[in-house]
Image (tube, rainbow over all chains, first blue to last red; front, side, top):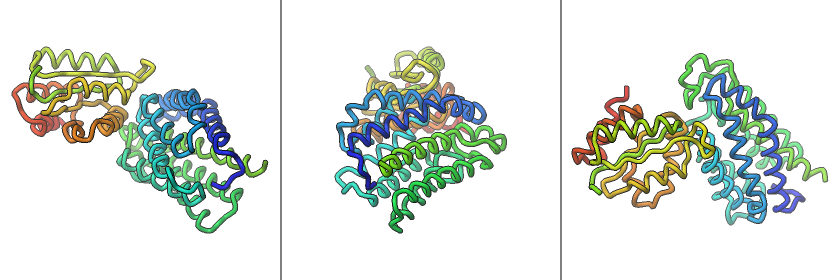
Length: 216
Length: 129
């Protein structure tokens, strides 16, 4: 994405912002997951993003796609629940996709496209099954549309954030057919999906970082 | 060391994994190599991709490895562990869609008779609805 921030600084800010939002919302994620899952999503995400933060200096020295790839590997190794391989596959595929490409907006769209495809494959899932995809699929659509239409960064970020928030809400009335929540059947209806909630938090935090880049 | 299909047991709980392995050993003795792991990297409930990979590497042989898992994350982490193995090993390691305890015992019993990986997997998966 076009931004005035240097890439090392950008990586550091993204790591700090994502780890901070997960830290601040551990109890929310735990509560959502206790309602329809096994209650470990908050602590698992906290452990994963804390491990990424520990590797911050090493990651900041890498090109952003390589840093994403490495961060994905850290999540896969450290998280312990299903969210590790799921977020790990997303980040790793984004990193592989971006490696060697010109760092522009089209590349960001291509990276997220490949990341979401890898996530669907790993989870054997599509949007509509009450998962992280309820947020990430609309986010990808909003980002892709905005980039195609050459929307300036600030409104583009707003559109992406709105897509994330709207997508999160769509998970509430859904019947879970994937993941632990699917064991509950109709009792899963009426609860926000914890994975969609964590995806929303991450997207929102990432948008904030790019927004700071615009205003400075 | 023998040439039978090996078994890997992956549970969210280290106690379930170890208990399942104990039952398998009591049923089939040393005829089948068995490795097990459970718990997340902090020792809580969960699974660890590096631990699963290490288990598979410990028991791997040319006849292959059948992996028994309990819940969602155990399966997803096992899939990733298999993808991290050397390319020619990957098709020799399968995750059985079967209940972990019964599946492990049935798979090991089948493996102890010298059956190939496809037969071991099919026997374990007969237990699934």
